[in-house]
Length: 257
Image (cartoon, rainbow, N blue to C red; front, top):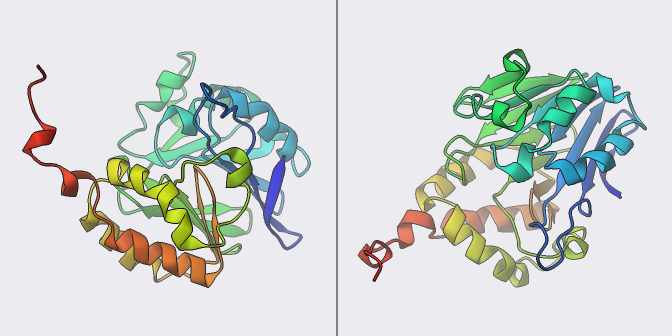
């Protein structure tokens, strides 16, 4: 079921927290997002095959699936774009992803030439026209993929942060915004220490996003952060975390016995 994150009558943002079977032994919990502006639409990180039907049914309340403009992919993992072949068949959409990954996307398709429908985002990011609005593709490299982007919607003031901010919770928990940031850290800490490359890139990211007017930070896994206080607390936490190569020692690189 869709959770409405923003709606001013012309610009709508929906999140989906329950389209994946995240029961023990099932798939990792992940979130999908639909942005609609004046009858035009984009899916942010639409996920694998199990999410396709739910997204398709929701978007058709606002426009025909054939009129989907974009799939915006933060990186090329299966839980981000494994369903891309179905979207290529059902719509005329183009996929926007880091230029590092454009030639990997066809591996999710049936082999038909789709090169004209895959648009590479340059390392410095870009501005994407969606209806009468603009979506910013923001550099988030090594958070956690080498070529990685977050997407900022300045109308809704939402930052879709991909794997940054991910928390390991159930889909029921994920649908509820974080109310106590510091009690929520325990659900994020282990993931960030392993999946985010270094504190150096975290500081660069914090300096960048503090220039934006953000009301919500919405990760691709787990719960979202709503309101200036929660957003500020999260940015400060990311800025200070030691992670990835910061934590590696020679003990991490031993010949197994």
